[in-house]
Image (cartoon, rainbow, N blue to C red; front, side, top):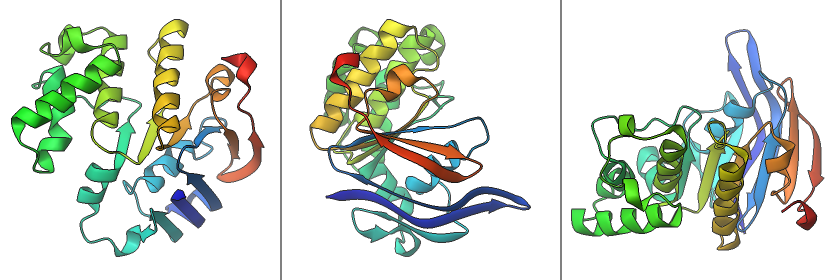
Length: 226
């Protein structure tokens, strides 16, 4: 089943054409890596796929819903889409657990249940021991794990990750990709922006962007690389 579909999507910022008629579909259980040089449109593609930005033309659908027709876009994002932002976007005044709980509480989940869910997913990413610490008390790798836990909490059908291994050493980066791959194998769709071929090798498919266009799309899933 297709989880996210972009059809002939363009995005223009003034005179800058960030994307030029890009079409891409990601299915349930599929991990797609997006690669390309700086300025090729990778982050723009991710933002459009999750409804954080709207296309200049073309359409974006999540599980068959055209985002242009969705009235409560923030609600759809909270319930269906998990993000790992390049700059993490953790809230400094909230503990690690509270950061992970926040999207669930905004969706009306009671605090006790939200905390149980948060602690479970923090354990899944190996960060349960920092649950009650604040972001400034965490290492870069720990903050990254908390951000990933926040993206995975609840029943997220689509996970968007923008360079999620950027602040991590190789071993920890491998663990994070393993987590994303496992969530994918449980039925989520994962769209991953990376510049590292090592991490792209965890994907089912690699899409190459250049100057706002998809110039190549290859199946990978090389078992020998994992």
